[in-house]
Image (cartoon, rainbow, N blue to C red):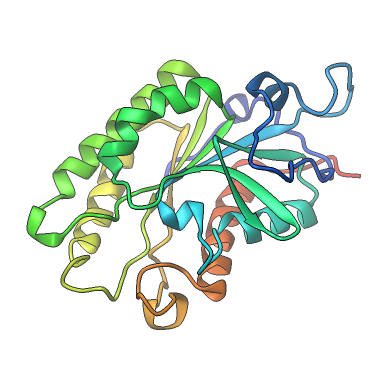
Length: 247
């Protein structure tokens, strides 16, 4: 796993987050999300986070995105942040913005990421993408190429972006998703080869038990699974994005 020096953290000193998420499907202008809560505020910078992926990121009426428990953890820990993106996932009373595209592949995201990220240039990107293929497609090489493309495009737009790249959760929907263990090995090798301290590996597959952590479809996380995913993201964020000044 790669590490981030202080210079790559953009002096990410954080304070207790105010409830800043909107409650409708219309996202604030990106310029507003980048500026923090007040352009003249002398408080530490509001760090923006973009969840990027498929339905596991987006959530649905049948299951919640991992972003909901992650938001709770970040708030409780005193981080000053905002989740942004073109879509709003709703779990009353909260709406969480993200770039989760249900049913879409990594290759699709690679064609969209530059336009998405130009509108929502978050400080931190959480990338979890690798589902929505069949094992018979032999998709691993294509997914890795798409992830490399996404990473390159994000860094080209924002050279200071921090990208947390997930080894994705495994599934009991077989043989469709039997390629995932091989994919996760390749994702780990890709991050190591990139050798970029702004690109950080997060092993979401470690300890994942689809029998306990997914809904009936054996793919999407249930409440326990969403909590487990959130904890893995949170652990990585704490390690690379420490808070030293909280209210």
